Amino acid sequence: MIPKPGAALADLAVKLATGIAPETTSAYAMANTGLISALLLAMAQDSERAAANRVADIEYMKALFARASSLNAPGAAAREAFQQGAPTGLRISALDAFHAQGFAALIDLHAWTEVHDPALSLSIWDFLRTHAERNRFDVPGP
Image 1 (tube, rainbow, N blue to C red):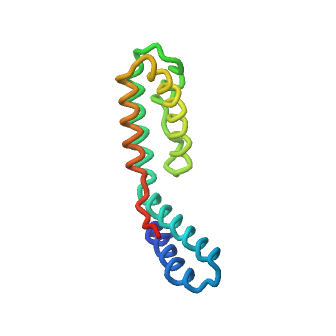
Image 2 (cartoon, rainbow, N blue to C red):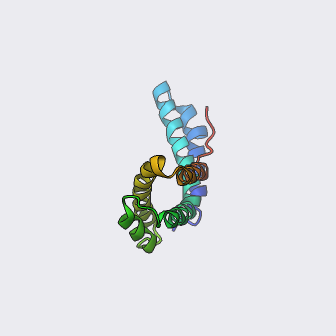
Image 3 (spheres, one colour):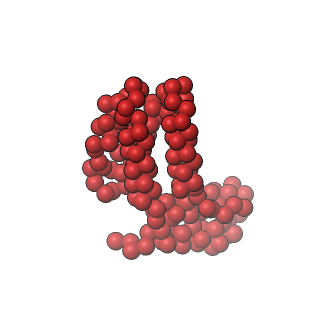
């Protein structure tokens, strides 16, 4: 078990950026180690928040779908199944699969609301902004 995976990934990223990249002899190798370092830092951030962010999104989508339950929007069965469902487990892969199910239903609902329910459409845009902000990466650039 790795007790602090986020810290371990960040440590690897720093080692690549400060210990290995400067020792490379080509610009290509330096760029690759820099890119890998940045990706490791992003993975470190996501490992700390992944489950909480997926669960927050799932709860938000369920609330949006509850608001849409009285509408005559297509995809009601998919939204209802999502509202009544739950992830199959606590692994990120299970959370991601259920999250993707919700997003598929949300995309269909959003397309419909753009024409038929502008207020709900704005609520969906609010969710998407919240989702993007919650999942942004704070990785230092060059």
